[in-house]
Image 1 (tube, rainbow, N blue to C red):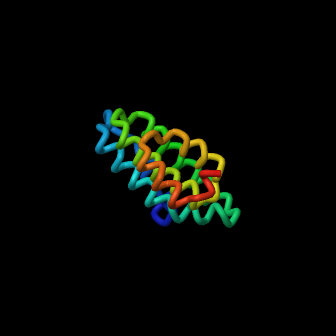
Image 2 (cartoon, helix red, strand yellow; image 1 turned 120 degrees about the vertical axis):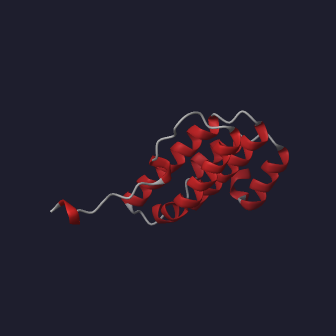
Image 3 (cartoon, rainbow, N blue to C red; image 1 turned 90 degrees about the horizontal axis):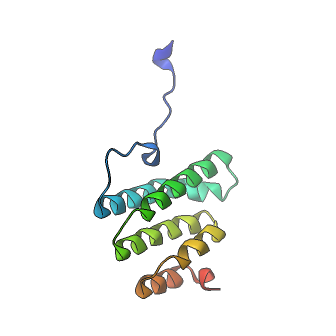
Length: 120
């Protein structure tokens, strides 16, 4: 009866990366991960263990990819997207740590404007 067996949904952050990613591809992948995980991030705030685990896996993979981006501005923009994801999940501790990693002043100002609690 395997025909009717439910297939597990594979998330974008669980997909294997074939070969090294360039900065543009890495940034696009982080954007896709953050978009796909947004619902789980909001769900993790409601104490849903499964959604919380999905958010945590997505954030972890996105951070690992962001560390490999060599261009500073692209990395800061990618980290900004991850900070937004963390804030949706009410993960203030991780968001503050990532916020401190942003070097471009205009991106820091934008993050502060979007999330004033990070500046405190």
